[in-house]
Image (cartoon, rainbow, N blue to C red):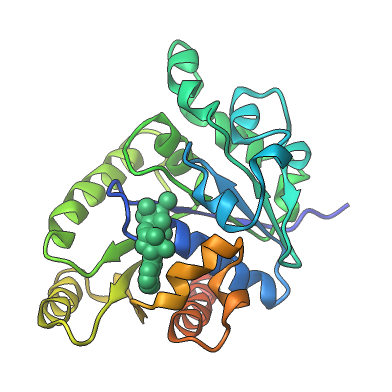
Length: 264
Ligand code: ADP
Ligand code: MG
């Protein structure tokens, strides 16, 4: 049996409300739409990625918590979503206890990495890990398991400030638990062209971070914010809206970067 090489991309930013979950859901949907087998791992106890993909709490038999503590495999915990080719390991509130329960274990940072190293888990060509809004043990598990980090950055005044902290954390992760961790890219989210400040943020971020920033700008779009309440990715809820189109474009940039990396 041949096991395909998969890519594990962690979607992280220690700030809440910057578009991590929205990016995880829609990027995953776009990748699934082109025929890739995609898995989201919901590592946020709030479970917004699970809810946003229409997975009712009562249907979350096993969760990312069970995977982290090692009582269930990724294949056992993964649930198929309404999006063809897209499965999710949902989150439950059990995750809140993970840090305390596991604090004494030597391999506490490598639980997700271990779970994603199995043949079953490696059948997914893309694994996107949706992180909670903090640098806790859950986020560290995601960073330790990943090939790369994708950072959503909201176009607002304090964006760069939070980003330097995040980049510092990524460099610490490289020095300790994951030397080969790459930055897939930085995506600017909730961009409002009518807002002068947003334009300024975009140009500042591009000046500071250059090519790491994707060309695609995700616009602030009401259809994108409505979609989760229908349990659907924006791409299914309204494919034509500007937000969905931007996420499709982002997916093609992500794929292009993966191709370049392979060729290098
Ligand atoms: P995070 O996971 O970083 O906390 P979310 O993806 O949950 O952030 O986004 C925070 C809120 O902003 C959610 O209510 C979401 O629906 C909304 N949102 C995210 N992206 C957009 C967008 N491009 N346009 C409009 N609303 C958005
Ligand atoms: Mg979230």
